[in-house]
Amino acid sequence: MRKPTGWVALHRKLWESDIWKSHKPFDERSAWIDLLLMAEFEDRDKAKRGQILTSYGELANRWHWGKSKVYRFLHYLETENCIEISRSESGTANGTANGTVLTIEKYALYQDVWNGKRNEKRKHNNNINNIHAPDRAGTLPERNEEDEDIGPIFA
Image (cartoon, rainbow, N blue to C red):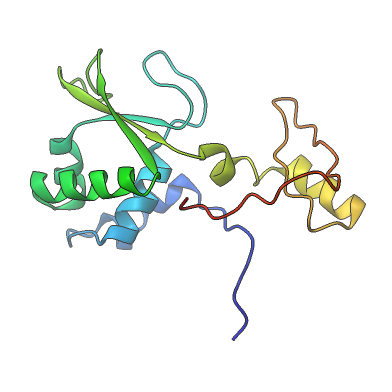
């Protein structure tokens, strides 16, 4: 079987599915996808794009895990350069006074590649190797020979 390449877009409506609402504990893959879905898509008052304001307790409840498992998982993701963990000065999104800021590393890599204008441009150029993300206006830069490959998502 050929190894798949490219991206898959996941809509946040995934959270509304019966499978996602299940009371079964999450596995690590589901928790990682949940973090990607939870991250802010654009800058907000308390969190910047790619960040999540939360707490270990909130994630433990959400994923049906103990706080120690959440702690170990998040610190594993941090050692793999998937996230950065820092303290929240303003609490969590749900109003908890003391919180944690999780910053998804390479967030633009996960999100900017799925853009209608980008796909139109790709079809127009018939160039599947053009993997650059659009700027805020939706404009894609042209790929040239000096561009580097994006490399692995888990650095």
